[in-house]
Amino acid sequence: PAKTWVVDLAPASEGSLGWSAKGVKVPLEAGPGGLSGAIELGPMVAGVAPAAIRVRLSESQPGKGLDRLALDSNRNGEVDAGEVLETEPRESRGKLWSSFNGTVNVPVTAPDGAIRVLPFPLALWYVADPAEPDADPILRWSARGWMEGQFESPSGPVTVCLAESNLDAIYGTSDRWAIGSTPKEAHGPSAFRGLDDHNWCGDEAWKMVEFHPSGLQVTLQRFDPGVTYAEETEARD
Image (tube, rainbow, N blue to C red):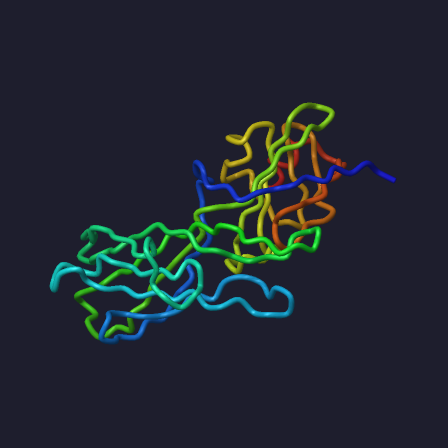
């Protein structure tokens, strides 16, 4: 049988991948405390669906704009200390943008069967358009993080990244992966391909033969696509 490399991955968010998945829309409802909604995120664990992540947008001062976001990152249904994010709304193209960075907890079942809680960094934003005062309020969010790990190949150290295209905290073939001899190389936006597609580290092609839905582990194998990297790059251009 062909040799395989089993690589353990961990949550990462240092730096940038140069791209992000399309933002997820969260419908909001007006109430006495502001605009409220819920983010659904994460897999079932031990047969139980994860609790929703409650969000609430509000103003610290009337007329200042929505500058506070309560983010129930631990999913206990309450706003605890440290769960209120603040921002300075900014105007762009005649619209008022309120942008926040936060992190929520995502319980997963690890490859060994244990339950782990992983940090899931989010970018969240709300856009108020004075030209559409009756528009339904919507919060949008996207992932700021990914999964990353390293292993030693016959040609030297290799960095592997998994990043979500379908933002559900469950890795599947609709998501993407990258590989490189350095983290910087693996983080390049052009390095990412679908999980069911082979990829390149320098002039060596690799195939992902298995991946865990949690993103905590992948299995890689050397692969012969029948063409060189240069030939394939030209053909796919």
